[in-house]
Length: 132
Image 1 (cartoon, rainbow, N blue to C red):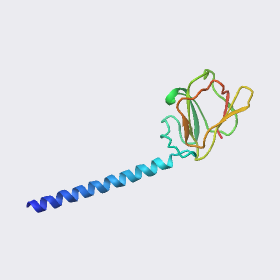
Image 2 (image 1 turned 90 degrees about the vertical axis):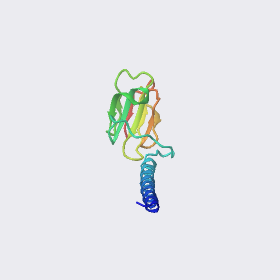
Image 3 (image 1 turned 30 degrees about the vertical axis):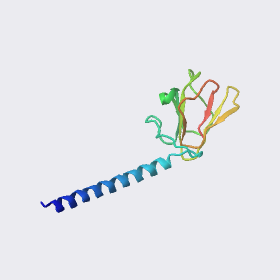
Image 4 (image 1 turned 180 degrees about the vertical axis):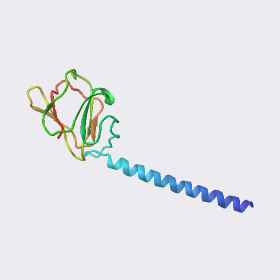
C-alpha cells in the first residue's frame, strides 16, 4: 500500500469516526433537552425504581430506599417513618405537578412539572401527597 493510499484510508476512518461522534453527541443532546423541567433546568434520568407516570418518595437523600410510589390523582397519606430528610422524583407525564400537604391537609408545596426532583428534601412537614 502506498503512502498516499494509506493516508487516504486514515482520513476516511477519521471522518467516519467524527461523523459517528457528532451523531452520538446530537442524540444525547436531544435526550437531555427532553428531560428538562419547566424552569428549563436539566433533570437527571429517573431512578430505576421510579417507573414512568409515578411520583416516588425516598427515605434517604439522593433517591435511596424507596418509601412509596403514587400515580393516582387523589390525596394519599405517605408511609409512617418519613419524619425528616429524604428525596423525591416526579416521573409523571410531562408537566404534571404533584402536591404535598401537611397534617391538617393544607397545601404546603407544589412540585415543578414533571420531570422534576429534589435529591435532598424534607418529609418532616409532609403527611399527604396528591400525585397529580
